[in-house]
Image 1: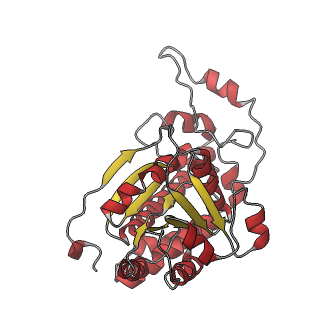
Image 2 (image 1 turned 120 degrees about the vertical axis):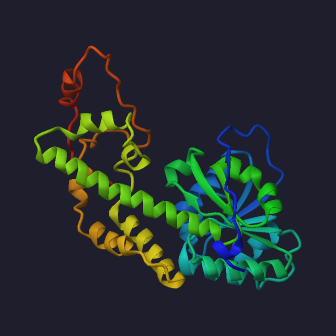
Amino acid sequence: MAIGPAAGRQECHVIDLTSTIANTSPLKVGVAGLASRGRAVGQRLRAAGIRVLGFDDDVRTAATSGLRTVGTAERLAQECEVEIVAPDGEEAAALLEELLTFEGLAALRTIILIGALEPRRVQRLADAASQKGIALLDAPLDGGDDAILAGRAVVFAAGSQAAIGSCRPLFEALGRLVVVGEAGSGQIARTVNDLLRWANVLAIHDAFSLARACGADPSPIRDAVLHASGSNRALEEWGRVGIAAAREDIQAALLLAHESGASMPFLNRLDSLLASLDPDQMAGLFNLGVVDLSRPAEPAILPESDNMTDINESQEAVVNSGGNIG
């Protein structure tokens, strides 16, 4: 199965599914991997009225997840109609490969991978699942735990259209669903999104460091830019994600570029540029140390007759704690 031009033109369908679910879903959903992301997904689905079971190899992680759990991965697969695999990389691959060896999975009809894994590996696993009569959906999430818990994540869903449709209640609970094509395309969409996001982070850092070097306060300038053509989500949500997460995303993109033979000169520099950033300097760039970063920024709009004095006075009340951006 090919991904990209050889696979034909794929349309992207965006469905805004952030409204509250009124009725309890009949689905019984399992979540494998109850670290941060899996725990947030399980709790969000349960809050939406969906029946959720969890499993994690680590007993303590399972016990502190806040979810009803089972003792083995096989038991989870046997009891659920849909199983969500939450981890990234080798941990996700191991869970998926083990899952496909289990027998007697009469109820299980769909597996959803919400973590990161190489696209071609996802394709192979989707083919193997299909041979057992199970649909594997490639549906990585954009958004951290706070976004997941608030139902504001974005789901890059790829795979069987029928399976995506049957899992709609799950995606409704998590936020916005974007259908991007065949299995593997979800991982590609996530990678493209990550590259653009971190490129924006670097641009923001340099642009507002320039503002500070010129003697200006970056904070009111940020408020103004949020209403102008230079606005982007990285600027809106500055301070929520650390550099370590950025470098993990870029390393995954570098691996994909190597496997596909794509020439990515900017990507090669992006990793080293991110490595050179000072997290403390980034945290204090906009005096956001005491701002509630769980909410989107709400910049003030001045009347046309006013100048920037009011904003500057309000900024004096904000304490620059130099807090942690992670």
